[in-house]
Amino acid sequence: MEKHLSNITTIIETYNDLSAPDAVSVSGLLKELSSELFYLEKHRADYFNKHAAIMFEEQTSAAKAKIKADHEVPEIYLLRRIMNAAYRVCDSMRSTISSLNKEK
Image (cartoon, rainbow, N blue to C red; front, top):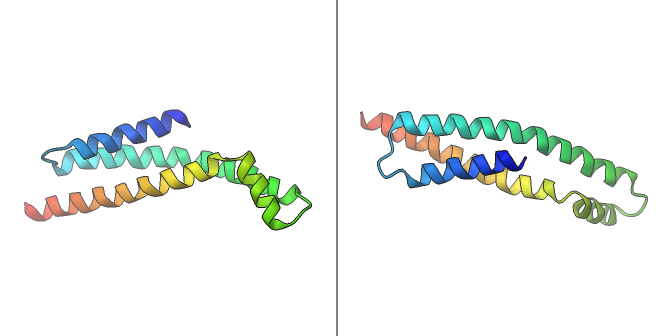
């Protein structure tokens, strides 16, 4: 999982550092970013299942069960936040590609 997160950071930094983006390079970055997000979805699903199992097994209130599950599986929150931000970068890349193609 750490490797995918590192790759996503590198891709986004590369996109951010483009001084004169062209559709081909942004498309390549979008392809890489989308692929990394695909692989992270598997990790997110695994952590979600662990989180849900803890909540299901807890015999107290739903609020206490959620607190316990959040504490024991902090990765689910991390992945949700990072992946949502990365998906917004994907949207930005698509907009950039669209704008560049209109300029032709």
